[in-house]
Image 1 (cartoon, chains in turn green, red):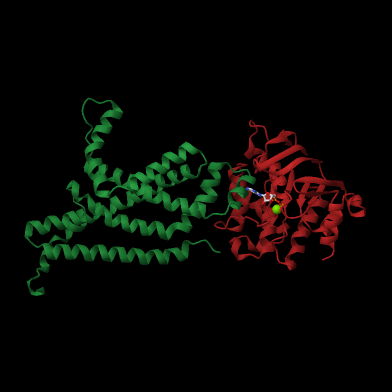
Image 2: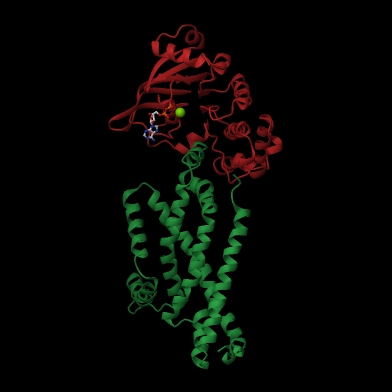
Length: 230
Length: 243
Ligand SMILES: Nc1ncnc2c1ncn2[C@@H]1O[C@H](COP(=O)(O)OP(=O)(O)O)[C@@H](O)[C@H]1O
Ligand SMILES: [Mg+2]
Protein backbone atom coordinates (compact mmCIF):
# COMPACT_ATOMS: atom_id res chain seq x y z
CA UNK A 1 0.00 0.00 0.00
CA UNK A 2 2.79 2.37 0.93
CA UNK A 3 4.12 1.97 -2.57
CA UNK A 4 1.17 3.91 -3.88
CA UNK A 5 1.87 6.82 -1.57
CA UNK A 6 2.78 10.03 -3.24
CA UNK A 7 4.85 11.87 -0.67
CA UNK A 8 5.71 14.52 -3.17
CA UNK A 9 2.18 15.84 -2.94
CA UNK A 10 2.92 16.74 0.65
CA UNK A 11 6.25 18.35 -0.18
CA UNK A 12 4.73 20.51 -2.84
CA UNK A 13 1.90 21.59 -0.57
CA UNK A 14 4.13 22.42 2.39
CA UNK A 15 4.37 26.20 1.86
CA UNK A 16 0.62 26.47 1.48
CA UNK A 17 -0.08 24.18 4.42
CA UNK A 18 2.21 26.01 6.79
CA UNK A 19 2.27 29.64 5.64
CA UNK A 20 -1.45 29.81 5.26
CA UNK A 21 -2.93 26.96 7.20
CA UNK A 22 -0.70 26.64 10.23
CA UNK A 23 -0.27 30.38 10.59
CA UNK A 24 -4.01 30.72 10.84
CA UNK A 25 -4.33 27.80 13.25
CA UNK A 26 -1.61 29.09 15.57
CA UNK A 27 -2.86 32.67 15.48
CA UNK A 28 -6.38 31.56 16.28
CA UNK A 29 -5.13 29.27 19.06
CA UNK A 30 -2.97 31.96 20.67
CA UNK A 31 -5.54 34.73 20.50
CA UNK A 32 -8.38 32.47 21.62
CA UNK A 33 -6.33 31.16 24.54
CA UNK A 34 -5.39 34.68 25.63
CA UNK A 35 -8.91 36.02 25.25
CA UNK A 36 -10.39 32.92 26.85
CA UNK A 37 -8.05 33.26 29.82
CA UNK A 38 -8.91 36.91 30.38
CA UNK A 39 -12.65 36.45 29.94
CA UNK A 40 -12.55 33.15 31.85
CA UNK A 41 -10.75 34.77 34.77
CA UNK A 42 -13.39 37.49 34.82
CA UNK A 43 -16.10 34.79 34.93
CA UNK A 44 -14.28 33.01 37.74
CA UNK A 45 -14.04 36.23 39.73
CA UNK A 46 -17.73 36.83 39.19
CA UNK A 47 -18.56 33.38 40.49
CA UNK A 48 -16.37 33.86 43.54
CA UNK A 49 -17.38 37.45 44.17
CA UNK A 50 -20.02 36.55 46.73
CA UNK A 51 -22.51 38.66 44.82
CA UNK A 52 -25.41 36.30 44.15
CA UNK A 53 -26.70 37.67 40.85
CA UNK A 54 -23.28 38.15 39.34
CA UNK A 55 -22.26 34.61 40.31
CA UNK A 56 -25.50 33.20 38.93
CA UNK A 57 -25.06 34.90 35.57
CA UNK A 58 -21.51 33.59 35.23
CA UNK A 59 -22.61 30.12 36.35
CA UNK A 60 -25.42 29.93 33.82
CA UNK A 61 -23.11 31.14 31.08
CA UNK A 62 -20.48 28.51 31.88
CA UNK A 63 -23.00 25.68 32.09
CA UNK A 64 -24.65 26.78 28.88
CA UNK A 65 -21.41 26.89 26.91
CA UNK A 66 -20.27 23.57 28.28
CA UNK A 67 -23.46 21.83 27.27
CA UNK A 68 -23.24 22.72 23.59
CA UNK A 69 -21.12 21.02 20.93
CA UNK A 70 -18.43 23.43 19.84
CA UNK A 71 -19.12 22.87 16.17
CA UNK A 72 -22.66 24.02 16.63
CA UNK A 73 -21.59 27.17 18.45
CA UNK A 74 -19.14 28.03 15.69
CA UNK A 75 -21.77 27.48 13.06
CA UNK A 76 -24.57 29.35 14.74
CA UNK A 77 -22.38 32.17 15.87
CA UNK A 78 -21.17 32.80 12.37
CA UNK A 79 -24.71 33.25 11.14
CA UNK A 80 -25.96 35.17 14.16
CA UNK A 81 -23.15 37.66 14.76
CA UNK A 82 -24.07 39.87 11.79
CA UNK A 83 -27.60 40.18 13.14
CA UNK A 84 -26.45 40.76 16.72
CA UNK A 85 -24.10 43.43 15.41
CA UNK A 86 -26.95 45.01 13.53
CA UNK A 87 -29.13 44.97 16.59
CA UNK A 88 -26.40 46.40 18.83
CA UNK A 89 -25.42 49.21 16.51
CA UNK A 90 -28.86 49.86 15.12
CA UNK A 91 -27.57 49.55 11.57
CA UNK A 92 -29.99 49.05 8.75
CA UNK A 93 -28.31 45.91 7.42
CA UNK A 94 -26.58 42.97 9.08
CA UNK A 95 -22.97 43.83 9.96
CA UNK A 96 -20.62 41.66 7.97
CA UNK A 97 -18.04 40.02 10.19
CA UNK A 98 -15.23 38.04 8.65
CA UNK A 99 -14.96 34.34 9.25
CA UNK A 100 -11.76 34.89 11.24
CA UNK A 101 -13.27 37.46 13.60
CA UNK A 102 -16.37 35.34 14.01
CA UNK A 103 -14.45 32.17 14.81
CA UNK A 104 -12.10 34.04 17.15
CA UNK A 105 -14.98 35.47 19.15
CA UNK A 106 -16.64 32.07 19.26
CA UNK A 107 -13.53 30.35 20.54
CA UNK A 108 -12.89 33.03 23.14
CA UNK A 109 -16.44 32.73 24.44
CA UNK A 110 -16.36 28.96 24.37
CA UNK A 111 -12.91 28.54 25.89
CA UNK A 112 -13.69 31.11 28.57
CA UNK A 113 -16.18 28.67 30.04
CA UNK A 114 -13.45 26.06 30.46
CA UNK A 115 -10.72 28.46 31.51
CA UNK A 116 -13.03 29.97 34.10
CA UNK A 117 -13.47 26.61 35.79
CA UNK A 118 -9.72 26.10 35.83
CA UNK A 119 -9.06 29.56 37.23
CA UNK A 120 -11.83 29.11 39.77
CA UNK A 121 -10.17 25.96 41.06
CA UNK A 122 -6.85 27.82 41.05
CA UNK A 123 -8.21 30.72 43.06
CA UNK A 124 -9.88 28.38 45.51
CA UNK A 125 -6.61 26.56 46.03
CA UNK A 126 -5.12 29.71 47.58
CA UNK A 127 -5.54 29.73 51.34
CA UNK A 128 -7.78 32.43 52.80
CA UNK A 129 -4.83 33.77 54.73
CA UNK A 130 -3.26 35.14 51.56
CA UNK A 131 -5.99 37.63 50.64
CA UNK A 132 -6.35 38.44 54.34
CA UNK A 133 -2.66 39.32 54.56
CA UNK A 134 -2.91 41.41 51.41
CA UNK A 135 -5.95 43.30 52.72
CA UNK A 136 -4.24 43.80 56.06
CA UNK A 137 -1.43 45.59 54.23
CA UNK A 138 -3.97 47.96 52.71
CA UNK A 139 -4.26 46.48 49.25
CA UNK A 140 -7.70 46.91 47.71
CA UNK A 141 -9.73 43.94 46.48
CA UNK A 142 -8.58 44.54 42.91
CA UNK A 143 -4.92 44.85 43.95
CA UNK A 144 -5.18 41.74 46.09
CA UNK A 145 -6.45 39.79 43.10
CA UNK A 146 -4.00 41.33 40.67
CA UNK A 147 -0.81 40.99 42.69
CA UNK A 148 -1.42 38.20 45.18
CA UNK A 149 -4.21 35.79 44.30
CA UNK A 150 -4.25 35.57 40.50
CA UNK A 151 -0.49 35.21 39.98
CA UNK A 152 -0.49 32.27 42.37
CA UNK A 153 -3.65 30.76 40.91
CA UNK A 154 -2.22 31.10 37.41
CA UNK A 155 1.08 29.47 38.32
CA UNK A 156 -0.64 26.65 40.18
CA UNK A 157 -2.93 25.98 37.24
CA UNK A 158 -0.45 26.48 34.43
CA UNK A 159 -0.15 22.79 33.48
CA UNK A 160 -3.92 22.46 33.23
CA UNK A 161 -4.23 25.73 31.34
CA UNK A 162 -1.70 24.61 28.77
CA UNK A 163 -3.28 21.19 28.46
CA UNK A 164 -6.57 22.95 27.76
CA UNK A 165 -4.79 25.11 25.18
CA UNK A 166 -3.52 21.99 23.43
CA UNK A 167 -7.10 20.77 23.24
CA UNK A 168 -8.03 24.18 21.86
CA UNK A 169 -5.26 23.89 19.28
CA UNK A 170 -6.86 20.70 18.02
CA UNK A 171 -10.37 22.10 18.28
CA UNK A 172 -9.56 25.04 16.04
CA UNK A 173 -9.74 22.57 13.15
CA UNK A 174 -13.52 22.73 13.55
CA UNK A 175 -13.52 26.04 11.72
CA UNK A 176 -13.72 23.92 8.59
CA UNK A 177 -17.49 24.34 8.88
CA UNK A 178 -16.94 27.96 7.90
CA UNK A 179 -14.75 26.90 4.97
CA UNK A 180 -11.80 28.65 6.58
CA UNK A 181 -8.33 27.63 5.50
CA UNK A 182 -6.75 26.59 8.77
CA UNK A 183 -4.12 23.86 8.73
CA UNK A 184 -6.58 21.03 8.41
CA UNK A 185 -8.65 23.03 5.96
CA UNK A 186 -5.59 23.60 3.80
CA UNK A 187 -4.66 19.94 3.92
CA UNK A 188 -8.18 18.98 3.06
CA UNK A 189 -8.25 21.34 0.07
CA UNK A 190 -5.05 19.89 -1.32
CA UNK A 191 -6.36 16.39 -0.67
CA UNK A 192 -9.54 17.05 -2.64
CA UNK A 193 -7.77 18.85 -5.44
CA UNK A 194 -5.10 16.19 -5.98
CA UNK A 195 -7.19 13.24 -4.97
CA UNK A 196 -4.64 12.34 -2.28
CA UNK A 197 -6.85 11.99 0.77
CA UNK A 198 -4.85 9.34 2.59
CA UNK A 199 -1.52 11.12 2.33
CA UNK A 200 -2.81 14.52 3.30
CA UNK A 201 -4.94 13.40 6.23
CA UNK A 202 -2.19 11.16 7.48
CA UNK A 203 0.26 14.02 7.28
CA UNK A 204 -2.15 16.35 9.06
CA UNK A 205 -2.53 13.82 11.87
CA UNK A 206 1.23 13.52 12.24
CA UNK A 207 1.62 17.29 12.42
CA UNK A 208 -1.14 17.75 15.04
CA UNK A 209 0.30 14.87 17.02
CA UNK A 210 3.86 16.19 16.91
CA UNK A 211 2.97 19.73 17.88
CA UNK A 212 0.74 18.58 20.73
CA UNK A 213 3.44 16.28 22.02
CA UNK A 214 6.11 18.94 21.90
CA UNK A 215 3.77 21.32 23.71
CA UNK A 216 3.04 18.82 26.49
CA UNK A 217 6.72 18.19 26.87
CA UNK A 218 7.33 21.93 27.00
CA UNK A 219 4.72 22.25 29.73
CA UNK A 220 6.63 19.94 31.98
CA UNK A 221 9.88 21.77 31.39
CA UNK A 222 8.27 25.16 31.88
CA UNK A 223 6.44 24.08 34.95
CA UNK A 224 9.54 23.22 36.88
CA UNK A 225 10.87 26.69 36.12
CA UNK A 226 7.81 28.84 36.77
CA UNK A 227 6.38 26.90 39.69
CA UNK A 228 6.34 28.64 43.04
CA UNK A 229 9.10 27.33 45.24
CA UNK A 230 7.47 25.51 48.14
CA UNK B 1 -5.32 54.38 69.89
CA UNK B 2 -7.70 51.41 69.67
CA UNK B 3 -11.14 51.75 71.23
CA UNK B 4 -13.31 48.66 71.31
CA UNK B 5 -16.74 49.16 72.78
CA UNK B 6 -19.57 46.70 73.26
CA UNK B 7 -18.71 44.60 70.23
CA UNK B 8 -20.99 41.68 69.46
CA UNK B 9 -20.43 39.29 66.61
CA UNK B 10 -22.31 36.28 65.39
CA UNK B 11 -21.02 33.79 62.82
CA UNK B 12 -24.57 32.47 62.48
CA UNK B 13 -27.82 33.43 64.16
CA UNK B 14 -27.24 30.76 66.80
CA UNK B 15 -23.49 31.14 67.26
CA UNK B 16 -22.29 34.28 69.01
CA UNK B 17 -18.52 34.44 68.85
CA UNK B 18 -17.99 37.80 70.60
CA UNK B 19 -20.16 39.03 73.44
CA UNK B 20 -20.06 42.64 74.55
CA UNK B 21 -16.31 43.08 74.22
CA UNK B 22 -15.02 46.38 75.52
CA UNK B 23 -11.42 47.43 75.94
CA UNK B 24 -8.87 49.86 74.66
CA UNK B 25 -5.22 50.16 73.81
CA UNK B 26 -3.62 53.55 74.36
CA UNK B 27 -0.65 54.92 72.46
CA UNK B 28 2.56 53.13 73.30
CA UNK B 29 0.77 50.44 75.25
CA UNK B 30 1.38 46.72 74.82
CA UNK B 31 -1.68 44.62 75.52
CA UNK B 32 -1.52 40.83 75.56
CA UNK B 33 -4.68 38.85 74.83
CA UNK B 34 -4.84 35.26 76.00
CA UNK B 35 -7.46 32.62 76.55
CA UNK B 36 -8.36 29.08 75.56
CA UNK B 37 -8.46 28.04 71.94
CA UNK B 38 -11.74 28.97 70.30
CA UNK B 39 -12.48 31.77 72.74
CA UNK B 40 -12.60 34.40 70.00
CA UNK B 41 -9.17 36.04 70.30
CA UNK B 42 -8.40 35.88 66.59
CA UNK B 43 -11.87 37.07 65.74
CA UNK B 44 -11.56 40.06 68.06
CA UNK B 45 -8.18 41.12 66.74
CA UNK B 46 -9.38 40.76 63.14
CA UNK B 47 -12.31 43.03 63.93
CA UNK B 48 -9.82 45.78 64.79
CA UNK B 49 -8.69 46.15 61.17
CA UNK B 50 -12.05 45.05 59.79
CA UNK B 51 -10.85 41.77 58.34
CA UNK B 52 -13.92 40.45 60.14
CA UNK B 53 -17.16 42.42 60.24
CA UNK B 54 -19.20 42.61 63.42
CA UNK B 55 -22.89 43.22 63.95
CA UNK B 56 -23.01 45.67 66.83
CA UNK B 57 -20.75 47.89 68.88
CA UNK B 58 -17.98 50.19 67.74
CA UNK B 59 -14.26 49.98 67.11
CA UNK B 60 -12.12 52.97 66.30
CA UNK B 61 -8.45 53.15 65.49
CA UNK B 62 -6.71 56.49 65.95
CA UNK B 63 -10.11 58.16 65.92
CA UNK B 64 -11.33 56.46 62.73
CA UNK B 65 -14.39 54.26 63.11
CA UNK B 66 -13.66 50.93 61.38
CA UNK B 67 -17.32 49.93 61.22
CA UNK B 68 -18.38 53.13 59.49
CA UNK B 69 -19.27 52.26 55.88
CA UNK B 70 -17.72 55.57 54.80
CA UNK B 71 -14.31 54.63 56.20
CA UNK B 72 -11.63 53.99 53.61
CA UNK B 73 -10.66 50.55 54.87
CA UNK B 74 -7.58 49.95 52.71
CA UNK B 75 -6.17 53.27 53.91
CA UNK B 76 -6.93 52.46 57.53
CA UNK B 77 -5.46 48.97 57.24
CA UNK B 78 -2.28 50.30 55.68
CA UNK B 79 -1.60 52.05 58.99
CA UNK B 80 -2.35 48.97 61.10
CA UNK B 81 0.31 46.28 60.87
CA UNK B 82 -0.80 42.70 61.26
CA UNK B 83 1.20 39.52 61.81
CA UNK B 84 -0.50 36.16 61.38
CA UNK B 85 -0.03 32.78 62.94
CA UNK B 86 0.95 31.22 59.62
CA UNK B 87 3.11 34.16 58.41
CA UNK B 88 1.21 34.53 55.13
CA UNK B 89 4.17 35.73 53.14
CA UNK B 90 3.41 35.80 49.43
CA UNK B 91 5.08 32.61 48.16
CA UNK B 92 5.44 33.76 44.56
CA UNK B 93 7.43 36.86 45.51
CA UNK B 94 10.99 37.17 46.71
CA UNK B 95 11.47 38.32 50.28
CA UNK B 96 12.36 41.86 49.23
CA UNK B 97 9.34 41.99 46.91
CA UNK B 98 7.13 40.85 49.77
CA UNK B 99 8.30 43.95 51.59
CA UNK B 100 7.97 46.30 48.62
CA UNK B 101 4.58 45.32 47.20
CA UNK B 102 2.32 47.26 49.54
CA UNK B 103 4.78 50.14 49.96
CA UNK B 104 4.57 50.72 46.23
CA UNK B 105 0.97 49.83 45.47
CA UNK B 106 -0.63 51.27 48.59
CA UNK B 107 1.65 54.08 49.74
CA UNK B 108 2.85 54.89 46.22
CA UNK B 109 6.50 54.88 47.26
CA UNK B 110 9.11 54.78 44.52
CA UNK B 111 10.70 51.40 43.94
CA UNK B 112 14.18 52.36 45.10
CA UNK B 113 12.82 53.97 48.24
CA UNK B 114 10.78 50.83 49.01
CA UNK B 115 13.78 48.62 48.47
CA UNK B 116 15.91 50.81 50.72
CA UNK B 117 13.25 50.73 53.42
CA UNK B 118 12.81 46.99 52.98
CA UNK B 119 16.52 46.29 53.23
CA UNK B 120 16.80 48.45 56.32
CA UNK B 121 14.02 46.48 58.00
CA UNK B 122 15.44 43.14 56.90
CA UNK B 123 18.71 44.15 58.48
CA UNK B 124 16.88 45.05 61.62
CA UNK B 125 15.33 41.58 61.90
CA UNK B 126 18.66 40.02 60.95
CA UNK B 127 17.69 38.74 57.48
CA UNK B 128 19.40 41.04 55.04
CA UNK B 129 21.15 38.14 53.31
CA UNK B 130 17.83 36.45 52.56
CA UNK B 131 16.39 39.33 50.51
CA UNK B 132 16.61 37.54 47.17
CA UNK B 133 15.22 34.22 48.38
CA UNK B 134 11.67 32.98 48.25
CA UNK B 135 9.63 32.52 51.44
CA UNK B 136 9.67 28.73 51.28
CA UNK B 137 13.45 28.77 51.40
CA UNK B 138 13.37 30.28 54.89
CA UNK B 139 12.69 28.65 58.24
CA UNK B 140 9.45 29.39 60.06
CA UNK B 141 11.14 31.76 62.46
CA UNK B 142 12.78 33.62 59.62
CA UNK B 143 9.50 33.84 57.72
CA UNK B 144 7.75 35.31 60.72
CA UNK B 145 10.49 37.90 61.14
CA UNK B 146 10.06 38.81 57.47
CA UNK B 147 6.32 39.12 58.08
CA UNK B 148 6.99 41.55 60.92
CA UNK B 149 9.36 43.53 58.72
CA UNK B 150 6.77 43.58 55.95
CA UNK B 151 4.22 45.07 58.33
CA UNK B 152 6.72 47.62 59.66
CA UNK B 153 7.58 48.75 56.15
CA UNK B 154 4.20 50.48 56.05
CA UNK B 155 5.14 52.68 59.05
CA UNK B 156 2.18 51.44 61.08
CA UNK B 157 0.82 53.36 64.04
CA UNK B 158 -0.16 50.12 65.76
CA UNK B 159 0.75 46.45 65.35
CA UNK B 160 -1.58 43.48 65.77
CA UNK B 161 -0.16 40.00 66.35
CA UNK B 162 -2.29 36.85 66.19
CA UNK B 163 -0.39 34.04 67.88
CA UNK B 164 2.82 34.91 66.03
CA UNK B 165 4.83 32.08 67.57
CA UNK B 166 2.35 29.25 67.92
CA UNK B 167 3.08 27.73 64.49
CA UNK B 168 6.83 27.70 65.15
CA UNK B 169 9.17 24.99 66.28
CA UNK B 170 10.12 25.69 69.90
CA UNK B 171 13.71 26.61 69.07
CA UNK B 172 12.51 29.41 66.78
CA UNK B 173 10.12 31.07 69.18
CA UNK B 174 12.67 33.30 70.87
CA UNK B 175 14.09 34.82 67.68
CA UNK B 176 10.60 36.13 66.88
CA UNK B 177 9.84 37.19 70.44
CA UNK B 178 13.12 39.10 70.61
CA UNK B 179 12.07 41.20 67.62
CA UNK B 180 8.70 41.84 69.27
CA UNK B 181 10.29 42.79 72.59
CA UNK B 182 12.54 45.31 70.84
CA UNK B 183 9.54 46.72 69.07
CA UNK B 184 7.64 47.07 72.33
CA UNK B 185 10.57 48.77 74.03
CA UNK B 186 10.80 51.28 71.20
CA UNK B 187 7.30 52.35 72.08
CA UNK B 188 5.24 50.64 69.39
CA UNK B 189 1.56 50.29 70.27
CA UNK B 190 0.84 46.57 70.19
CA UNK B 191 -2.08 44.21 70.63
CA UNK B 192 -0.73 40.69 70.88
CA UNK B 193 -2.65 37.44 71.04
CA UNK B 194 -0.21 34.98 72.56
CA UNK B 195 0.24 32.34 75.18
CA UNK B 196 3.86 33.34 75.72
CA UNK B 197 3.54 34.55 79.27
CA UNK B 198 7.26 35.28 79.41
CA UNK B 199 6.71 37.87 76.72
CA UNK B 200 3.72 39.25 78.61
CA UNK B 201 5.71 39.53 81.82
CA UNK B 202 8.55 41.30 80.05
CA UNK B 203 6.78 43.98 78.05
CA UNK B 204 3.01 43.93 78.48
CA UNK B 205 1.25 46.79 80.19
CA UNK B 206 -2.04 44.97 80.41
CA UNK B 207 -3.29 41.44 79.97
CA UNK B 208 -6.74 40.56 78.66
CA UNK B 209 -8.17 37.13 79.28
CA UNK B 210 -10.94 35.92 76.99
CA UNK B 211 -13.21 32.93 77.35
CA UNK B 212 -16.20 31.93 75.23
CA UNK B 213 -16.25 35.22 73.38
CA UNK B 214 -16.17 37.39 76.48
CA UNK B 215 -13.45 39.53 77.95
CA UNK B 216 -13.35 37.97 81.38
CA UNK B 217 -10.37 39.79 82.74
CA UNK B 218 -8.66 43.03 81.69
CA UNK B 219 -6.00 44.02 84.18
CA UNK B 220 -2.56 45.60 84.48
CA UNK B 221 0.09 42.94 84.04
CA UNK B 222 1.14 42.76 87.69
CA UNK B 223 -2.43 42.43 88.88
CA UNK B 224 -3.14 39.74 86.32
CA UNK B 225 -0.17 37.60 87.23
CA UNK B 226 -0.49 38.44 90.91
CA UNK B 227 -4.06 37.44 91.53
CA UNK B 228 -6.43 36.93 88.62
CA UNK B 229 -9.89 37.63 89.90
CA UNK B 230 -11.84 35.05 87.95
CA UNK B 231 -11.70 31.29 88.40
CA UNK B 232 -11.50 30.75 84.66
CA UNK B 233 -8.39 32.92 84.32
CA UNK B 234 -6.77 31.22 87.28
CA UNK B 235 -7.41 27.81 85.82
CA UNK B 236 -6.11 28.89 82.43
CA UNK B 237 -2.97 30.40 83.90
CA UNK B 238 -2.14 27.39 86.00
CA UNK B 239 -2.60 25.21 82.93
CA UNK B 240 -0.29 27.13 80.62
CA UNK B 241 2.28 28.03 83.27
CA UNK B 242 2.61 24.43 84.40
CA UNK B 243 4.31 23.44 81.18
N1 LIG C 1 -15.32 31.91 59.61
C1 LIG C 1 -15.89 31.29 60.66
N2 LIG C 1 -17.14 30.79 60.55
C2 LIG C 1 -17.73 30.18 61.59
N3 LIG C 1 -17.15 30.02 62.81
C3 LIG C 1 -15.91 30.49 62.97
C4 LIG C 1 -15.20 31.15 61.91
N4 LIG C 1 -13.99 31.52 62.39
C5 LIG C 1 -13.94 31.11 63.66
N5 LIG C 1 -15.07 30.49 64.03
C6 LIG C 1 -15.39 29.95 65.36
O1 LIG C 1 -15.37 31.04 66.25
C7 LIG C 1 -14.81 30.69 67.48
C8 LIG C 1 -13.68 31.61 67.81
O2 LIG C 1 -12.65 31.45 66.89
P1 LIG C 1 -11.27 32.22 67.01
O3 LIG C 1 -11.55 33.67 67.09
O4 LIG C 1 -10.41 31.76 65.91
O5 LIG C 1 -10.72 31.72 68.42
P2 LIG C 1 -9.25 31.75 69.00
O6 LIG C 1 -8.41 32.61 68.12
O7 LIG C 1 -9.42 32.32 70.35
O8 LIG C 1 -8.78 30.35 69.06
C9 LIG C 1 -14.37 29.24 67.33
O9 LIG C 1 -15.36 28.43 67.92
C10 LIG C 1 -14.32 29.03 65.87
O10 LIG C 1 -14.62 27.69 65.55
MG1 LIG D 1 -6.72 32.09 66.98
